[in-house]
Image (cartoon, rainbow, N blue to C red):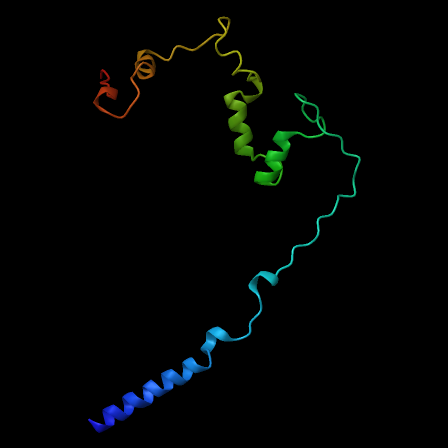
Length: 136
């Protein structure tokens, strides 16, 4: 009992002695907002740039080439298999503006059958009303 009281008194004295000096919270430390200083703003040295005109594309930039460069590091050479596949598929015969003439009455469309028409006419959604049965 006597030993327990002695240990409690010593620990209480140690705790109080730590609080007297302010502890780790009252020490001198650097201000965290002064650690990194912002550099001064500078004016770029090239003043030859002209602002773009409204509605005009910049003639010096090709957005497709920039996208290929950013994504893949520029255009890549095609493999023999890929070249053969594109030749068989008729990639050189494709119309460049096919999306803009898709609704034109002069455009010939391949008939894909009744199944495709049924799928196109289905209601939107994931419920029971979006199901269809196909003849077998």
